[in-house]
Length: 386
Image (cartoon, rainbow, N blue to C red; front, side, top):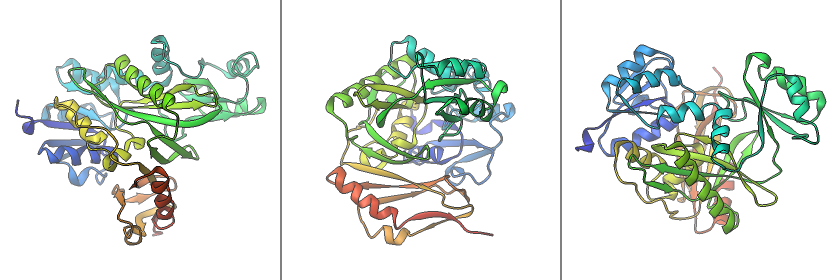
C-alpha cells in the first residue's frame, strides 16, 4: 500500500487537529478538516476545510467521500452520524463503539469497572435526594463531586459539594432533572498523572512515560515528565493505561487521566480517545510524539519510539483577557534556547482559553521547572480591546 496517497479526514479544527495535520503533512498525506469555524487553527494547514457543524449529516457524508479514514480531535460529536458512516463501510478510528462509551462518563466508568480497573466510587444521580443519600457518612460522605455525564471539560460540568447546603445548588447548576448527572467520591489527592498510549490496527501498543499534571482552577496548567512519583506508581499507571487500551480496542492515541491518592493507590479518572493536552510534552520530549503516532496508527504504519529524550515541562498559555488575540513576550522567552513555543492561531482570546503552550527541556526536572517559571513571567496571551 502506498501510504503517501492516504487521505485523512479530521472532525474538529482546533489545536489538536492542527498538530495532527502538521505530522500528516510530513508524510505528504492529504487532510480534510470539518469544523464550523472558518478561521479555526487547522484552516491554514488543511488541504480542504469543510465549514460545517458537528451535527451536519450532509457534511459528514461529504467528508467521508473525500477521504480513506476519519478521525477526530475531540469526543463531543454526534456518534450517531459517525455510526451511519461506519455502517456504510467508511473507516473511523478510534471506533464509534469506543467513542459512544467514552463520551458518556457514566458508561465509560461502568465499562472500566466491569473490567476490574480501579477508580473512585460513582453513581448515577436522578434527583437531589439521591445526592443526599450518597453524601451520608456510610456512603461517599462530604465532599463529593457532581458531574454531568456528557459534555464536560476543563472543570465545566463539575461541582464540588462540600456540605448539605450546596446539594440543591449543585444539582440545579448542572442542569437538574434535564441533565443526566453522576456523583463520584472525592479523592484526597497526592498527585494527578496521565499516560498517553497508542494502539495500532494490528493490536500493537505503545505507552509513553507517565506525566504529572498540575491544574489551576480545574484547567491544566503544567505537565511534568517524568512524573515525580515512585517507581511502583509509575508501573501501576503504565499497566492501567495498557489495560484501558485493551478494554476499548481503540486504534490511535488515547489519554488515561489518573489520581494518585495519599496511600499510593492509582485510580482512573477519565479516558480521552484522542491526543491530549497533557501529551504535548511529547512533541519536544520524545522521538515520536503523540500526534505522529496517532497518524501512524490510523493509516497502519509502525510506531515511532516513545522514550523520553530529556526531562520535559509543558506549560499552557491561557488567555488573560478577552478580545483579538495577541501573544506578548515571544522574543524575550526565546532568549532561552531550551524553550519551544506553540501558538495555536485562535483569532480571539478569552479568559482561561488555551491559546498556546511552551515546552522546556533540561537535564533534570528541577532545571526544566526553573526555566519554565522564568518563562511564565515573560510570555502571555491576551486579548486586545477593540
